[in-house]
Length: 268
Image 1: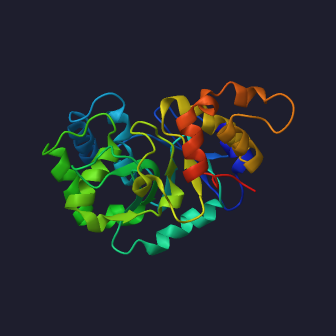
Image 2 (image 1 turned 90 degrees about the vertical axis):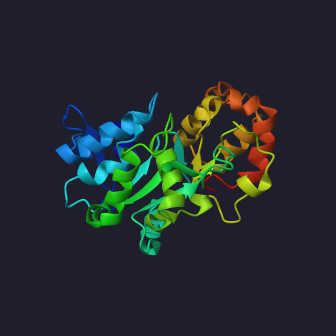
């Protein structure tokens, strides 16, 4: 978090840290990760329907109860994402929310095939003020906390996927370019799932062996670096150590898909 603040902080960006045991962090506004009593009850009931890291993820749908009221909108990003275009372009998506209180992109895999409208929680735009003032959102949280469906390992992501069916008016579909997902869990053979017609804005390395892609690209999101990762070869001389140590650069399926679907996920 300190590195993110040092590299990216500016007068236009406010970084927040939510900490169970608050301490000052330079360049960030620190808020205690605490829920008021009603929200604790909802969180506890949601958590009994989840396992693994799911309970931790389930804080995200409740952040309107965590942040101070003067914080009205936030972007929540997973640590395995690479912002390729100006973050202000992503922030501008709030203007298109209409009745929605939060924005998430579709899951770019077949993870929820046949069960719901799959959403991905790696990039979230939360209109905290609208979440606080929406009786319908409060009712939706209460409904799912009562246990009609098991939420499981992915926590908030699965909750949003269920809500996309039952409470679709509360969710804004974030355009595909703002969450380009590299997960190889189901392969890259379905162009209708993985193709995106607009220029990549954010790359999401949401698959175990591909986490190193995010690490490399966060250090240098240039198209030269991305080309080396995609092809598994260097332009001249030895391959940089951080790229050579990333096993994704030698996975044929990743290399083919990265060229076919994600070739513009870099900064020129």
